[in-house]
Image 1: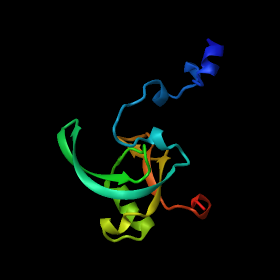
Image 2 (image 1 turned 135 degrees about the vertical axis):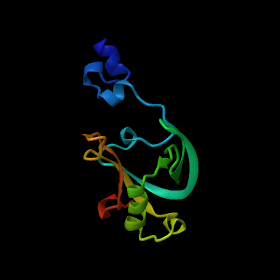
Image 3 (image 1 turned 60 degrees about the horizontal axis):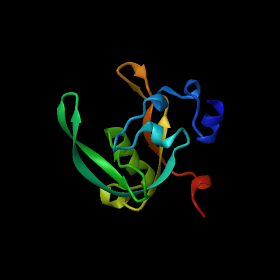
Length: 130
């Protein structure tokens, strides 16, 4: 089993995080998709979408990215404001084409528990591609 695990480049079950044990099949970006260091992404545009929630359908703002194979991200109020702050945009259209970093902020709390979640920050000079 150990040899097969190495050949398939798969972590042994005991070495996997709980998120890795039962991955989600969400069509939206999740904290497990970006990692602690995050991903540098380019804003493509914004769209309202209807999502199914525990309390029924909800209208949510979604940001789409230009990078291929990157899922769109559901925006909360904080992250939508952060896009404006880190890009210098005052309107959504002004953020299109700008780069942001989406990362897993391990300090995000929900329901009185620290669970981590997606957060947005500016791109540092060391992250800017040549």
